[in-house]
Image 1 (spheres, rainbow, N blue to C red):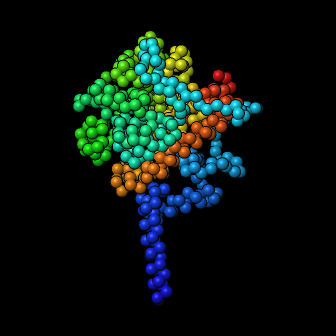
Image 2: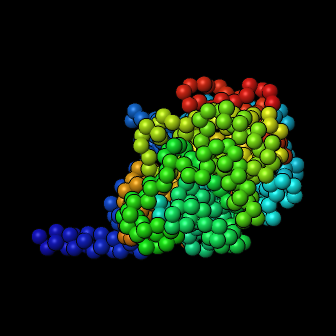
Image 3: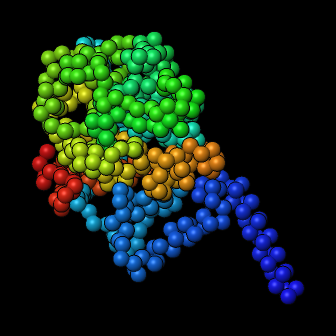
Length: 478
């Protein structure tokens, strides 16, 4: 009996010590928020590779992101090797055409960067931006993301030398603290740059443009999760801090209009872009989801006829994109997927003769090197990701983003859950993920016989499967 009691005491003390250890460590958010029981997840993740031969759900069947893609991001963010053995588990819908004589190490070149914005002529800005990374962080609003997540992203982006978009929730101090380049996004409610009546505040716009870190401004027409519907932030998440940043009442639901009240036509869009660029002196882009491709020809024709109306870049978000909460009808059935939309945009830009004037940024589930390289082949100058960087922070695809109960603290509003996310540790993971993506995209380019990624053309990728949502690629012609 005494022996049994002693065993129980030792077990209790061991569990107590383990609990204290889990709460104090900063590397694993799940263990910090859920001591002891969190080990079951890590055991399943580690042993799953060996046990999956006994299950019926393949690694590529999970949605919205399959286990193969998520595991690649997790390993990259942790700095763990992504080398595989015994062949591929993937079922690709496209492949890259490798060259008979790939590029040697001494022939490789770093991405030279691309300038966004022009310095002279109609539509010029005072401070064009030389973007030095082809892979960047797409817009995720402060408030939708926790302060710890935004802080980690900001510091990680600085280390990786990539830009970070604010999302439509406005510019927060955490965006600036890391020292990275910032893209200030303006949604339909104009959070952060609005007057009390919701109109654009030119004074507030000048204040934000005065920050040297704010390199560009982005007019958001729509995002992939909910084209045709504005952003939604529940009142419980509208704290005094969030309300001050956005310029809205505390504790009330933050619901953006379906579109900008002052942008209802191609001409009004062009005039708004020119107005923001004139006030800020910095490049201005437009984020949108492609619906009717005919809109692109009308828009680019206006840009040609009125060069001052021309945006400096456009971000094409696929209908499958977006981190925000939205009705399932919009998430599932509205907006062209990036696999269809990107080629429409790239071809329309070329028809209008605007390839060197307007840069294209592609987004929507482009979180691994193969998909980033595909987008560059199909005409994108840059690729931005939101959910890929959420995974690098430790997101486990729990699908609790809108509830404030995210178990990893990434989108949580509960202080206890947010406390589990250590910004210093996660910033390092963000940087490693961004740099690994760029490194492996460059490996693909070198295999295709290209010294750097700027040489990608449609002929370098070939579709081998054309199912619903499959990637469409050229069959060998530019």
